Image (cartoon, rainbow, N blue to C red):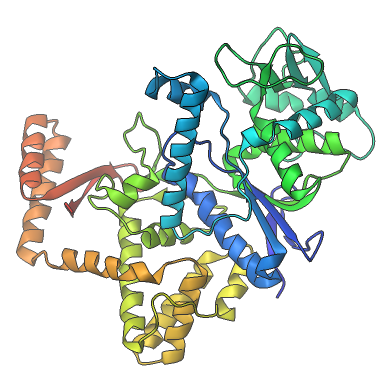
Length: 487
């Protein structure tokens, strides 16, 4: 079966042919471990987990190497460590923060049904590789030393001969466009506005290592060089797939291409570049200032979003319903629909006595759409058809549904939890629903007339009845309120 993937660099969907069919190599940018991962962080984890599963199916598990890094040197980590452990030396505090946050990340993505990558390198374990690349770039004239910094020069890259790509090709921008459209740091040690840092001096107490380029002052790496070094160490100078969120195309991935191609004199770093689309929450960009910032842990274990906690399989299915390259709107309604879908599937397969913890082979009808640039929606549509047939007594359809769910990582052992949640909703009688709906409508009218006291009174009355409200906006931007029974 032919695998076709959309390549951000060429801007087309192409047949995938690995450089080495005996070892398919994929790198995906992983978390910076300073806090709980938010739901936007979960999207690339889930998307590339499905691709990892698909590659293993097509080429054999032993012939696929998936690398997802851990960034454990970063200003945000330093700030969190100093805040949480003011009595400890900074390096010791940093180790506590990164180890704890990495455990939290693994617990959360495990709950989402994700397989562990083949290798999960930490940036601080690859300082030697970073220095080696930097030395190559200095020797080649692509980087320079100034005021204890080492900087990469995109201008030098674009002036070079020898088959190197032009800087800006991945992001499809010229140097002038990048200067105009980006927040470019102005610094006295830069020769040009687009030059970016490969290495910088460490501040007192910060993590530091011997510097490259003949610099006597200890320092630490810039962000972009970390991924170039880790992918080189574990996958080689060129590899098959590089993935991440669309927000990483520029500057992070553009700079990775520049560093790696110039250091190793190759026309490409990765043969295929894949990027998942943005995530927004209830129609708005997720941010702490808007109060709609939500972590994976909060969705799994609290009632912060939609008035209930959600099983990992529900979060995963909701993420898979939207094509990975399209923007996704994360809503309580979408989660409820996924919860209902899983309950329906559970009802379809349960009478057939299939082992919840078992593993059934994935049907070709699911593999085929996934092989077409991860067309999740077509695969899920097939699952709905099998559920319908299974409810009519078709054992083969039930087995196909189970096999598809297993392959997509939808954790059938968690489906009973979804059913129980749906059953709790069904216990609300029609009279109560009508009462709650009327109170919500009365509150909406009070809010529209700016009668905030009455609005707050109704909200408190509903809270006393065990009802949680969720204020948001509809597709036209008009205020809308939904309600859930508190769990």
